[in-house]
Every structure is written in structure tokens, then in C-alpha cells.
Length: 172
Image (tube, rainbow, N blue to C red; front, side, top):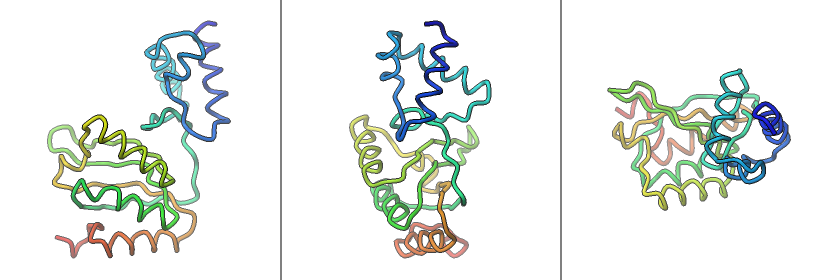
């Protein structure tokens, strides 16, 4: 199988996948290295395919009816609670963004929609002794949140405000 055929297979599988698929999984399936698959994905993205790398693997971007960017601030140990408040109120965390003084805007894909995905993310963070991007900016960070109804966004903001995580004009 050549690169173009492999990329077509990757695209077909990702287009019907219910959850992200790892490069390692594709590599085993096609009998190539993980890095070969990473290169295939990079070429697909360069051609304009709307693929994202999440902590759980690759996926096509899922369209949602509504999105909002919210600003939060909290300690790293509170990240799980913040994520739970968003998910519990019908939202999905699409990403995390920080404005770094040297590198500018840094963005991490999250695509977190369930408590299982929260637990997986936090478990991997702990296992890899990782740091939250917000640690670079004294806890201040942005999230792109997907939601279905305006009431869900209101509930998400209210839950974050109640916990003291929502960074607003009055937060300063």
C-alpha cells in the first residue's frame, strides 16, 4: 500500500469513527511506523482536511451548533472540577488557549465531551508528569466551548462563576 492509499484508508476510517484513533493503531494496521502515520496525517492536514490531534488520537473536527470562548483562571489541581462543570452542563471543551509572552498564542486540542475523557486526560497528565498550559500564565486560560442551546452556555458560565473559575471584569 502506498502513501496515497494509506491516507485514503485513514480518512475513511476517521470519517466514520465514533472516537479518536491513535497513530499507533493505524501503524499496526498498515504495518508501518507510527511516524509514517503522523506524516500521512500532516500531509492530509496540509491538503486542508479538518483533522485534529487530541490526547486520545486523531479525529475529524465535529461541527457543533454553537461555540463560545470563555476565560478562566484557577489552580492546576482544580482543572478536573472545571472540566466536570462544563461537561455536566452540556458543554464540550474543544481546546485550551494561553497567551504566552514569548511564543504568543499556544493552543492545545482537547475535544473532551464526557467524564471518561476527563479522567483519561487527567490520568495521562499525571502519568507523564505533565503541566497544564495555564501554568505558563498564572492560571489564566481560554477554552472554546461547544454547546447546543443558549441555556447550556448560561449554565456553564454560572457553574464556573460559582466555583470562582470564570475570569471576568470583576475577577481582576
